[in-house]
Length: 268
Image 1 (cartoon, rainbow, N blue to C red):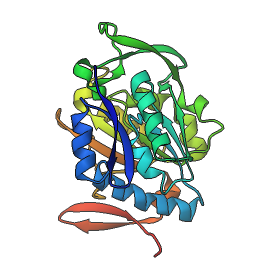
Image 2: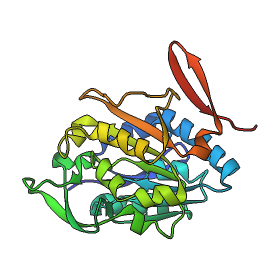
Image 3: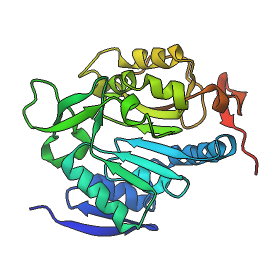
């Protein structure tokens, strides 16, 4: 039976299972933070949102054990942390409670292009990072509720979305178009061709075209470099940021080594 105990990394507490060696290593190395370069860019964008929109309301979609929500909570007014898998969801809630965080609301739900019921594949060897919307051929599953983002967030005016849902991002976007039209959030999502190909082989191209179609700008990676091509290698696991016009226009573009870089203009 797995041991479940509380650890302190930096200023944050995390309840962890003994098999979660990856999380223990990363969080210990970075004082409770995850993906440092991503977090640094996010913090700059939160400042920009406060300048332009006056508030920071985040949807952490694929919240996992809370490593992003816990760190985002310091800069956000409100966070909706979304995690569909039962065991991971309970761990997420416990981590939020352990840190006495009051501006994170949790929801056990998944997002897709339609409302209804679905199944979540549970990864082998207790690897929570393998959990994903199940294919018909996959047997180790648990039932989940699936919603369109446009329905779920219709009365929740989010302005920043972080999405990492193991290759299912494009289908979640198909159910989110009204949210982008109404609230115009900044969005960062992971494109992992190795994960998305289980559902659709040209997902990177479809995601890039989706944002072009709705009039969004970018994308950029965490260095600020503007990416002009959707062609990514099969081994690529990269986070991309897209922006509505009012956010993009509050940045500046610089040229360096034949590449273009975007960075937000933030007053001291």
